[in-house]
Length: 255
Length: 310
Picture (cartoon, chains in turn yellow, orange):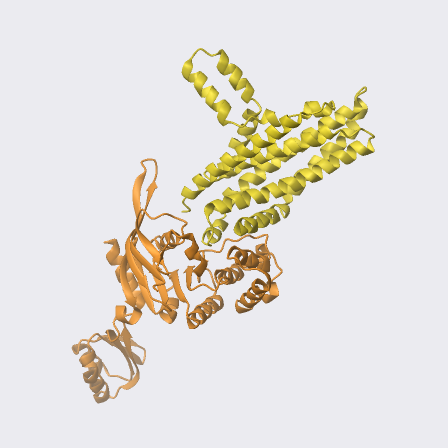
């Protein structure tokens, strides 16, 4: 446990010293702030524009950070060979993966907190009511980021940074379309294709589960049971993906 | 307790589209004794780094096994007593020297005052105290090598494994690394290091192993391997030797080369030295130098490499 903590802290330190992270956070805040200007272009529902753009900004830049920092954490270590001196220490490979993941989760929490603060401050200064549902929506965005990060880390245990990024982006896109996979499967006559689509539906993360932005923007209350089950689903999915990442990484050879 | 024991250690890689098997390390049997400096010699691509990676769990053996301090290398806990410096130091460049050492110390469970003291001690030992707050990205290769050596010692290891610790260093850097290795031996540690820089090996190693194409060709003390008294030739330089004297020297089996006033005579047979000196004296020559040439580690190394390739 101590070694996971040491690696997590070092990962967090690595990411906060990375200029790319600051650029992404800066642009996220810029996007959220720019909503103030855009609201003047709309007739009525000015608060909705700020909420829409704010939540979309947190989501988009959160995903970019999760994917591009996430994939670099393991594959960059292998490419730059810094991993040699770490694996040569009394550390299990799984501890390394969990440490790297935990460090990135810390970074994601910090970034989400910064971006959410920027968002809520913007709402406050524009005199828009801050609904608790908005906080819940941000919370579920963070859970979505945890899922994407776990997948990005898993991909980076066996492939190159570019392929890891490609797979992660693809997963993010398909993850928002899994319901369509099921609908499509239901319309097909071919048994095998239907089974494959059903299999993909269950294997791929259902990221739409974490998307309550629409409700939050209109101030509709989100069911507590829905919130709890979405968080439970996200955490379970992360756990399964990380176990898979550990199994793959355990077999990885460092030539 | 044997610091390091390899039994039939083998590693094969699958290469190319045909997944052709290539044996990089071939049935290595080796024992490194406690408290010795063991030089693991080999040409580029001989399998030195692969062997070290197998020992440290970066690669999995295809066959055979190894023990560190009498425990199998698959036991992660055994690394608690091992220090390792990788070939070409690749480290976290965003860390300062002291953060870097503290990070590795924490992986070994060190903390608080004990860790701080250890970091200070090692930075001083490798002469990096003044650079302790500089990020590693600003370090030269020599500085990285030194701080890398410090991280290999943060856990006060019983066995220190160094992969090409002198490569890329200038003569001063090499001497400093040599001194540190000798200092570690004085502390009772066992050092296993790979290299292809032979003068360093001759200076500090108790024993060596020569690896050629993944196979261990020779193992033993340098003196044993090259032969303590094996004189291969004797080079005699004289001044003022007449042509008649030079011809007589040739008749004794010597190779004669005249360089201005000096004549260099090389003989292969030690027993003819007395007769040669008699010729020099009789023909009014003046002895300038007499140097017996012994077989060197380099000769042995080149011979083993050549034999291993054929």
